[in-house]
Length: 346
Image (tube, rainbow, N blue to C red):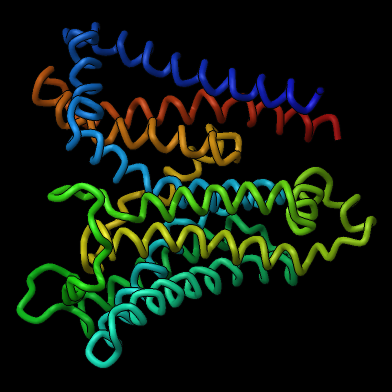
C-alpha cells in the first residue's frame, strides 16, 4: 500500500512539474507579446492535428522510448547511465556498417537482424565497459560515461568524414542502406516505421523482467540498498556490469532504428541530444514502462509541434526546448535537495 501511494505521489509530482512548465512558458510568451493560447493550439495541431502530424509525433517518440528504458533500467539498479548519447552513435554506426558490408553477399532477411544485433552488441560492450570500470575500479559511472560519449561521437565522426564517407558526398554520412534493409513505413510517406512496434515490445519485455524475474528482483534490490543486496548474496559487481551493458544495448537500439528507419544511413551528429533527453524521460516516467511511453509522447509532441507553433504563432520553435528544460528543472530540483539533505544527515 505504501509503495503504491509513493508511486502515485511521484506520478502526481511529474504532472505538476509538466503543468508548471507550460504555465511558466505561457507567462514568458505574454511578457514577450505573444498569445500563449494560440501558440499552444498551434503546438497541439502540429503534434496531433492530422495523421501526418501524429505520425511525426510517434516517430520522434520512438528513440526516446528506447533511451528512456535504458536510463530507467540503470536507475532501477542504483546506477546512472548518462552515456546514452555515445551508445546511440556506437549502435547506429556498427549496425550501418554491418548492413552495408553484408548487403552485397547475404540476403536482406538475414542481414537486417544481424546488423541490428551487431549494433546492440556494440552498445552492450560500450555500456558494459562503463559498468566494468565502476565495478573493478570504483570510478563513478557518470564521469566515465561522459568521457565515453565524447569518444563515441568523435570516433564515429572520424569514420564518416573519412574511410566510410559516401562517394561524392559533401555531407559526413555513409552510403545509403539498400531499400530492403530499411524498416517499412507504418504510414506511407512519413517517418513512422515499424520500430514503433519494437519499442512497445521492449516496454513489455522490460516490465516483465523487472516484475517477474529473479534478475529483476536483484536489480531493484541493488537500487534500494546496495549494501543489503551484497549481504543477501547478490553478486553486485557482476550485476553492475550486466545492468550497464543491457542499458547500453537498449540505448543503442535508438540509434539503430533511427539509422535503419528515419534516415536510411548513418549521418554524423544525427542524434542531437536524444541520449540526454532520455534521462528526463526516465525521471518523468518514474522508470516504469507506461510512464516512459507517456513521457516520450510528451517530448515527441513538443518536437513535432514546434515548427507549426513557429509558423502559426510567430514564436521561435526553440520554445519547446525551454519547456523541456523547465520540466527537467522542476523534477530534478527536489531530488537534488533530497540528496543534499541526505548527505548532511549521513
